Amino acid sequence: MKFSNIRLLVNDFDKCFTFYNDILGLECTWGKSGDNFASFNIGIPSGLNLFKAELMDIAIQNTGTRENEFVQDKMAIIVQVDNLNETYNSLQSKGVNFLTEPKDMTAWGIRVAHFRDPESNLIELYSELPKEKWDEDLIEDEKNFQKDK
Image (tube, rainbow, N blue to C red; front, side):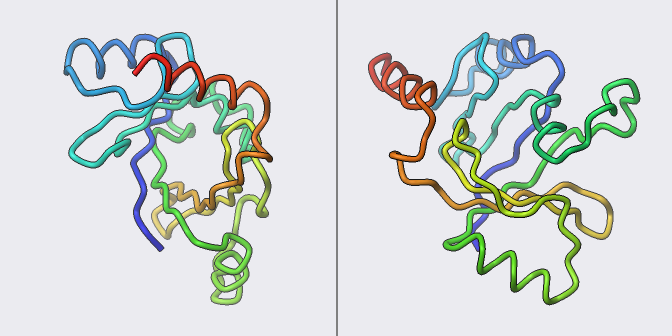
């Protein structure tokens, strides 16, 4: 396993994007205001991510928590693994109770599974999907973002 990033799950994406990009002056390595996801260089390329909380709620099948800010996740620890299915099976055999089974998130370009640590912190394991499995919007976003650099 390899630590990948910290993902802040935010309700007002544009306001948070402006804060990290314009006010703090962090280098944006992916995304823009109006998107659902952005990453920033914090000494680790793409080490800090912003993601719409409602989309993570959908991904982990935790909808309906937006009304209760104390229940909604505020951050997630993101860990990259070489083979998600193998890691999932290994951790499951050690007693880890997963919130989601491994699934392709073609709009994200990754295969993911989610679980919580003993203190209920959200952890996402992921493996990258080959680009031919990405959805068209993500492929277009990558082209546009690379062109802007």
